[in-house]
Amino acid sequence: MMILVAYFSHSGNTHEIANQIHKSAGGDIFEIQAVKPYPNDYDAVVQQARQELDSGYKPALKTKMENIKPYDLVFIGYPIWWGTFPAPVKTFLSEYDFSGKTIAPFCTHEGSGLGRSATDISKLCPKSALLNGAAIRGRDVKTARNKVSEWLREIKITR
Image 1: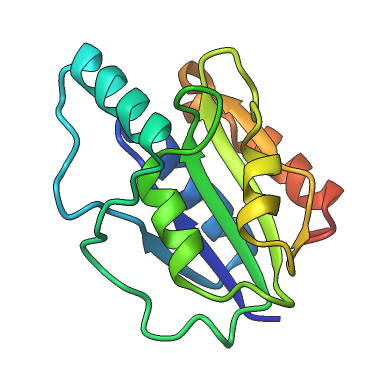
Image 2 (image 1 turned 30 degrees about the vertical axis):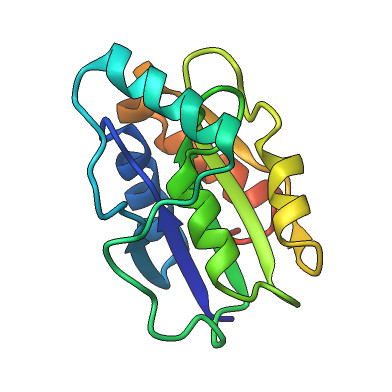
């Protein structure tokens, strides 16, 4: 089985979880990055994320996957912004054909869990199988290894 761990991270929390998944499950890792980086100021990011969500904006991505076809399982990671994934993840999910692939969502959050992100992934990738996702609180990412391992066992990726 070919595995891809694709993630978008603003503060570094989702990057940390993506690395933990990659270490346990193997495969390839890919960082989803917008051409225009998000501001560092929290309030500015919040405001921009809201505008992007409301308008359905899909930012251009800095890097592209050469070929997503070989991957059977795609982990998609992101912080929860306004109850779902950020706009760069929307672009990523829209630019590739995930038909027949299994998607395992994971997120970092500050109390909202997965929000409606799994439902939103299903809408963008209707011909994919969606596994139960993992939601890790931002403040817990450094100590989340056991939680990540438990989730990977639950979705039958590792033993």
